[in-house]
Length: 424
Ligand code: AMP
Ligand code: GLY
Image (tube, rainbow, N blue to C red; front, side, top):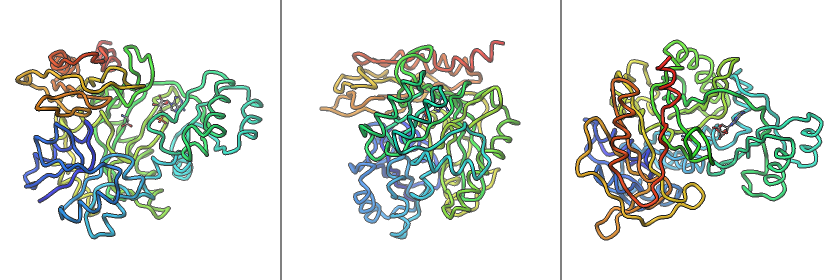
């Protein structure tokens, strides 16, 4: 079986690694891929969001399955276009992917499905929004409706900061059309968890819970990033809570999307806040997370290709998704200047051999004259596997510490919440 994988980050290297292990797979093409995926299949230089280019490539390659991993091509309707061309694709249609691409639509799905989430209102007129915010006299979380490269959320501390964010989005158009509509949301407190599930449009089978670390610096300080590291599973979400989240969050979302005429096939990702009053949904994504995928797939015991084929065929069953015991922890190595202005070109030194129970996934790497160099913001994810989270952490960092490039940035405290729980 031939697979075409769309995307080129750390998540896609992990997907390529897992897909290549399937006995069903004889050929893997990655577009555009990266220096890591080049060792697992054939990279083709078509950008992930070049929809026409991806359709042309798929028609020429005739894969048995196309796996669309990143958010942009999903929102732009690549799956719809592939289906129209008679190809099998894993991932939601543009209509279903609106659960990520429009925060207002996601709120509508949550309201219809009775899914626990923060109180919110949708605004598109600055003057009316200002009156509402001033009358309430408290700050709000301000979210641009559309995709804004992960920068569309401002957690305001004051009324003035709330208004400043509203002006930037509604009047100054800093996010263009993505910020023409804004969701104002009540601020929640608690621990954040990533809860992902496979769906065939009707049924939902959860993955292990994972935790990302979005801030650049230790102790969750500094600016927001795409994610500086992750681990799985998360002790705060045991089997009982996982079942409860499947029933109260994931299944109602899938049912509501089906009722709205846009059944969701692919990976549904709920960003949850574990508040004192119970779990609440902060956002939905319509895809695998990055860097969550780099720690989830090494723990997946089942054949990922079989699961994806079952989703596409509408015959997903819970016993198809089995997990290994133990933990995985991934540390992201980022370029100097990331996230504001990542600097490319630095030579990367890798260990000749990986230490035992580690995996190294490429993201922003490039080959220059036979030398591996920094080519993007998040450069590599060093993953450690272990019987315990502590063991996984020690192995992940043992690998990370053997990788060098000038100005390398990494957090030293990935997994701190889980390790703190384990100590008590
Ligand atoms: P989102 O893109 O919706 O996940 O938002 C990005 C980040 O903003 C989240 O990971 C949270 O840290 C934070 N955030 C989003 N919504 C809220 C909320 N209602 N209360 C507090 N923090 C939030
Ligand atoms: N890890 C966050 C995301 O994939 O959106």
